[in-house]
Image 1: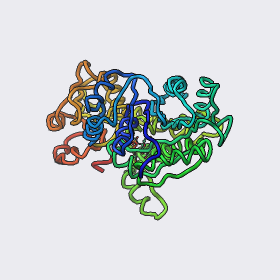
Image 2 (image 1 turned 90 degrees about the vertical axis):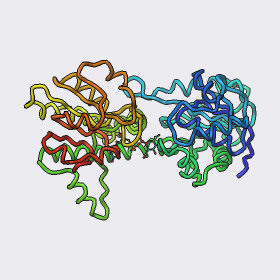
Image 3 (image 1 turned 120 degrees about the vertical axis):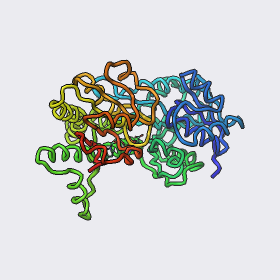
Image 4 (image 1 turned 180 degrees about the horizontal axis):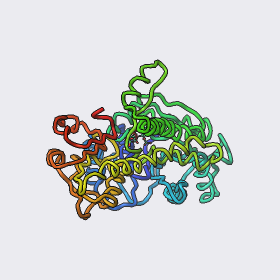
Length: 416
Ligand code: SAJ
């Protein structure tokens, strides 16, 4: 659908900002992507990308070539400002909103009546209202939704990203979007922008509900993974195969237990529940406990490996997988990395790490004695203990007969 907007400025060219900027540009809008990192700006302006995401480079190079997308280091005047900056955890598990605040300070001087500002970054409830207040502070000559409601000069909305890394281009277009307008008019204008490229439904609500929707989706998953992880520890205690147990329980028509693992990694599920816990600590008891259970799991695995390695004087341990989930190269917040690091610090013997998606060890593991990156074959052949940390497709082909003489610790249930 054709948009009534022509010029969009996307602040933050990361995993969400860059694909969104590129998709808007392919739909005929003139897009400037802003990033404080000069290397990112330079890379995008060459039609290349600085992140790993299938098919994205072809789209970016196409729109950069036609001039529809360009990158810059300073915010430029536009009709729509779309904020897609990181919102990491700061001190004491509290959200760090400094990148959002910095985007607000950069945008405020450029605003003109009729502009639309959209926040996409995962944010604690109330952040969109804070964006409105922050912009108003910088521009006392204009009115904003928290002051003037429907009559405001500037419209503001929250529209969370929900895409799965690795499938971003598909999910960006096909997923439903939740659009939280600070007023109905803010929402309506935001729907106008997203319907240029979204084939899913645009579901309209207020900004606080939209902020909470995003956090709830990831907290729901975290709590459910914690249930599976807790079950796995109970089952170890009771000498029950947790994988068989879950398969059986899931045959009940209203039971759908997720899979235990070595812990919860990535930038989202292990982080977002804290945004809820931080804003309602008294009420968010279950979510806090779930976070604690999931955070405990890597340490539980390390303890288990140490117990099983006690009978060897210098065990060779093959650690299969380092990424935070299967079939990707992303090591961010990966429980597997944490486990290998802790083993390197607490077990005498040799660690052979296998991660087919990387060529060199991450800094936290590099340069350690008795820890090397190995091929699957070499690691399995030499190991006394085989520790499976990630259920990569490639590990499924391992000949099970090669494991018969070894101590096998399977945190993912691949060899259940
Ligand atoms: N995990 C388990 N057991 C399971 C499922 C997952 O241990 O049964 C672990 C994975 O191994 C991994 C972690 O959880 O370490 C997270 O993996 P994931 O595939 O569940 O999710 P992410 O972090 O890659 O992406 C999530 C998605 N959110 C939901 O599915 C509700 C995605 O749609 C969001 O856009 C993304 O977070 C985000 O950016 O917030």
